[in-house]
Length: 480
Image (cartoon, helix red, strand yellow):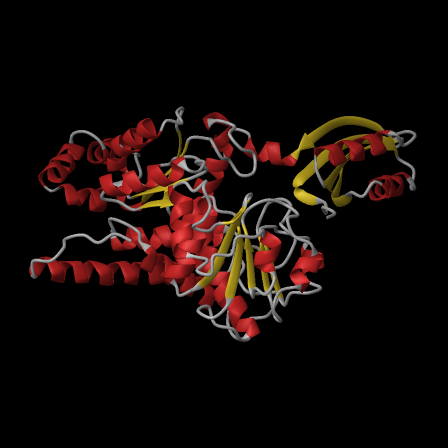
């Protein structure tokens, strides 16, 4: 599958060249000849004989970017002075900062924001700890926590290398939900140390977003923190992905006129994301699911089942199918892949039921070529930004946390996640809905607000029910 030039591999090349009229045209021809795309061309300085020009190009990858530079440098009379990677320039010094919300222009303001006035606020919180949500940044803060063990598609690259991703995640929280998020990269991959460290940090935050922690450790980390903390703990790689998949599937099923409880679903991938997707789909009403991993279908007769696979075997595949992924896909209505590239071919998609749905979410290369899948399936979604229907967690996590913080919720559960998925799906109107538009743009103005409102209302209703149960002597806390 050919990769198109992308601004994520955007470079600016400063060139000096002859000032005659045909020189600029030779630049354009050279870039186009090697498959690059010029996105900007600016004259930095001009003289009678020579020009200095900044040429900005989109490339496919770093090797392609170098090929563009080499092609420009090979033009007679052109000198390459400097090459700047625009993505690296954007990251210089980090992407986020902390700044004060209150003025500190004189002694009066300083005495209220800090000593001696701040002491009275601290005493009030000591007397009533719940006031921390009202009187500190806790009410609007989320910790974005990683150990660097499963960063994007890069694997175990460690906490420092994970920081640019965590900063980016924090910037998205601020941009789309006005949440103050703080990247916390831990120099340990020991479950006990991660859990204890986050537990110790938790008093300063209104929520914990676990990020890029590898399976199966991520399951234990999340479960233990949920039991220990009185704030929501949300593993975005699991639950953010699951919510967006459920939302997209709801709308894809609307397109083809099928029902979630009736369709046959084949899944590829039984890791963190796959397991979370499966559980949320089943909570929302899916009944006919077969999950495959690298060893084929997960079923109760397999002898290699860890606790997660044992749960999958006990709750899916009631017919005991024991074959491979291709066999599971044959006769299915929906394929959902969170696994590896090119595990299916067009002939496999052709064996699915009419009006089939393909969610091939492996990045950067999907489980099946989207162009080929479109020949046989009615709706195709990927994790890529250069195809329609991108399944992207940024569609949901800012709104989910905005709703949780606004409700001052002490946890997040499956009902809140289903509410988020329904709100996300409903952003796409009947007039907009179609095979190539099943999820909204992340820049849709009301997206985060609508997701947040749905999560907030669901959380508040649950809090009201819990209050009633406590008054009646029932359980004080319910977890999903």
